[in-house]
Amino acid sequence: MKEQIQFTLVKKTTRQRFYKASKPLSRDAKGRDYRYTNIKGTGSLKLWANKEKTTTKDWTPPSHFAGVVVSDAYTHIERICFPMWETELVIDDNPYLFVADNICGYNTFMTHGGDSGSVYDDKVYLRMLSKANGFQYKGIEV
Image 1 (spheres, rainbow, N blue to C red):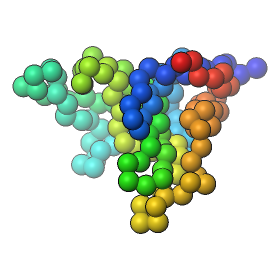
Image 2 (image 1 turned 90 degrees about the vertical axis):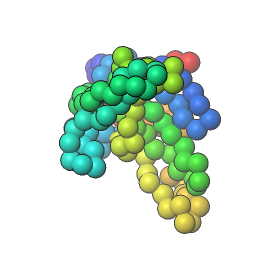
Image 3 (image 1 turned 90 degrees about the horizontal axis):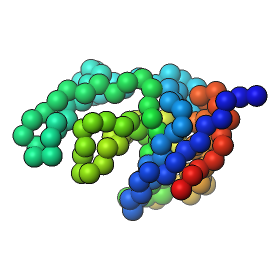
Image 4 (image 1 turned 180 degrees about the vertical axis):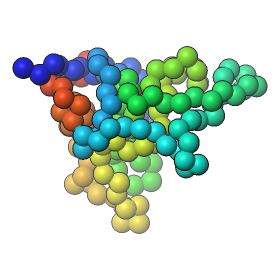
């Protein structure tokens, strides 16, 4: 029997749900190993190191992530998932950091208003990510 994984809803905004996983994840929904690379081709981000925003710090997202952000588009019908990490860099009273790397879900065309047929409940995406990472999906704890 596969090891089980459970997700806990740790934060919710108007268009995003932050789910912490009970086990680290390292693959996208297609089973590919995750590795962050920004536009400049490096693996690090420059972030504020304090709330006053006076100091920056280079931070490299690890290849494993602590959870998933399920995000709905503002301008059209679309739902995609991003990797999320817990970090000591508290941003807007939120210890969770994510980057807009699509690890699950479909990018839809804004010009056509999106595609409602490609949008599923959050649990569908979490189940797909669980399976791709070798776990059995146990559910969401709220």
